[in-house]
Image (cartoon, rainbow, N blue to C red):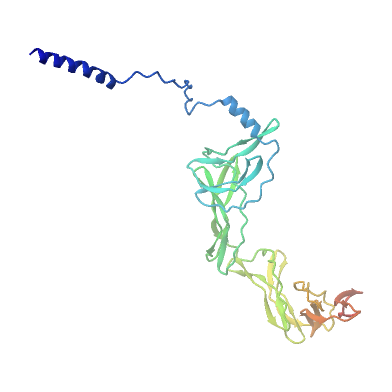
Amino acid sequence: MRWLSSLLLFGLIAAAPGDAAAQPRPQPPHPQPPQQPPPPPPDVRDHRRDGDRRADNRPTTPPPAPPEENPRPRRGQVWVAGSYEWRGGKWAWKPGHYESRRRNKRWQTGHWDQQGDRYEWVPGTWNDAPKEPDAPPAPIAETEQRRPGFAWVKGYWQWADGSYDWVPGHLERRQRGKRWSDGRWENKGGRWEWTAGAWNDAPKEPDAPPAALEEKRIARRGFAWVPGYWKWNDGAYDWVPGHLERRKRGKRWQPQRWDNAGGKWTFTAGTWADAPKEPDAGPPPPPSDEPARQRPGYVWVKGAYEWKDGDYEWVAGHWERERAGKHWTDAHWDNVGGKWTFTPGGWQ
């Protein structure tokens, strides 16, 4: 047994170096990076530095005059006018747009405000609208429509939820013996009140007719121009448009007219009357519009009115081939001693 104990002791001694080698050797400590201060929270800013930067970027010159915008009113929406923005050291235009109206709110347009030698943008915002109507905007220009048997109801501003909505004009069928009176806004003691439009009794007899409408005269050879006129119809006036009628030999169209005799308006219908032998009844009508024309080797001869068969008749312009050493003189009318004389065009 003695040899067995020696053998075990030798095994223990031989295994000891191997176990020591298996243990990890201590390593020198790694250098630690320097500590950085924690970043500020997202909502913490250096306002002093922002103010300096904003002052450096603010414009020193006023914005240009804004381009014209012509928005049409939309019910339930408000127009946010376009404005200039300062981008990259220059002015940039931002077009206007519509926004849905907010109940009992009114849009206050933004603007550029001068502060010292700089300009600061004051953004637009929604403010509380007044409880009672204030002064309405100016009415929007509309083209009045006409139709026999109908009345034109003008557009108007309607107060709704602290703001004004535009109600466009429209045609409404006329009521027998009635005349339409348009609604209106009135300032009564500093308070704006609306009086709605209504049908009222029309006068039994014609009152003063409206001013005649401007019409473009149509010229056509062999035809006479019959100008438009106002016709009294069941307590109101209807406009009858002008038109062409075939000319009658030796006759001239005498236009219809309204006359006031003793405060009473009477209508005289148009008719064909005997035409004078000479053009002494007045000057010729204004010449018809003809576009300016160019054509190499030709001369444009302007159209003109000529006296024919007791009336003025339009002769349209035409081309004439150029003539060497000559120039064309257009025809014209002159008043000589109270008498209108015609000089035809010709080469000179």
